[in-house]
Image (cartoon, rainbow, N blue to C red; front, side, top):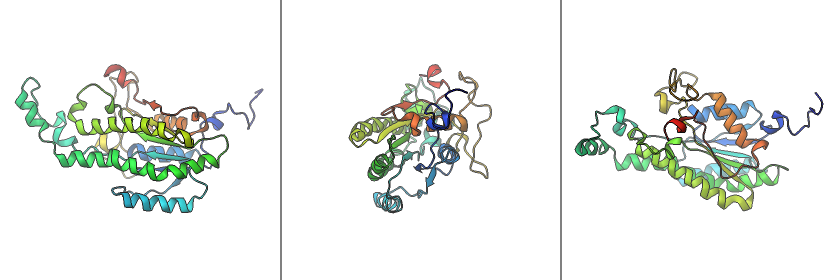
Length: 273
């Protein structure tokens, strides 16, 4: 076909592949993190091992120092994906018979949450993510400097729960933490524009994971068969959907995007704002 050559910048392989990219993904053992890791690796990226322990600033600093020593030319992508929902069982409306026309019933149910579950959820979903990207900024800036025509980026994985107007089925802690993460994305994008490190966010709807399905198989994959039929797309999210999102933001086709939130939700927000 006329105009289609290996060097044509309009080819999808140029826009949405990540050859020779160095990428770090937190929370990559299962669910969306595993999807993203496999999506990036399949399209040419080298995945940098990340320790599961991001619970303290000292462990994060140690991890970043080790990676910086091994990657003197910097890295191209940090995906902040680690997340928990510690209050899912105690306060989820699906786990109790709540009378929403009775103040005492609502109080009793929501009172099952604990300050500890709030603190632990925010520690993983917000605080640890903050201190992780702080330690990776210099490596990402180096990745930009050493990769002509490209700017390295951070992609935060939030959730549509962070902007929905409803009750989040009683999971207030999780929704509040994801709203904070969305705000943090905007703060960071503005702060890092001068060092040419982009910051974007994917806010997924329902995707299969241990959090949504309750379990995973021997390959650490989860299934949500039959879920999402009432949504415009008629199904829950798939690995292909997540691959399209991360490759768009991380690849060369996404270098014009900064401070953006990509709602990969199959139209969920159209039916439940």
